[in-house]
Amino acid sequence: MGHPPPAARSDRRRALAARAFSIVEREYAEAYPRLCVQSVAQRLGTTPRQLDRSLEPGPPLRLVIGRVRAHALHRMLLRGDVSDARSAAASVGFASVCEMRRHYRRVFGESPERLAARLRAR
Image (cartoon, rainbow, N blue to C red; front, side, top):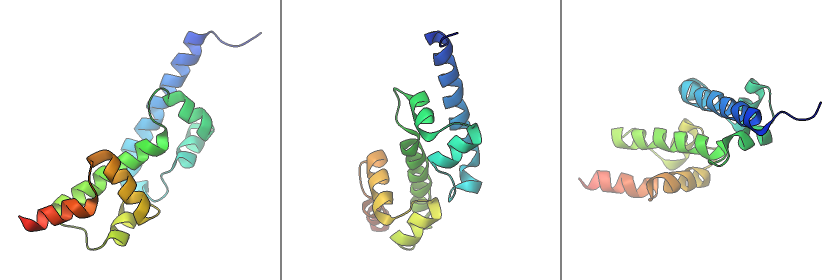
């Protein structure tokens, strides 16, 4: 029998990636605490490694989810809905303040605290 041709594997990977992005976009608001690579992979009937391979050459799904959470945090900061770093991290689904800062800085080029300070100074 053998393996499917590269084009068929590539099509399957693109379809898997599209379904993963759809889950992240559609379900983030209601499922963010549980939204992780493992849960998305389970929903798609695959493994986290296979899911990440389907996204190549793009970033792994954990970074995509981190970016979605960073954008949610950014919107909260702009609205003034953040009281402290720990509750902000938890409210958008980050496991820790350190993780929140790392993803936020990767997306926006500054810490969330710096943006909050700039907004207060206005």
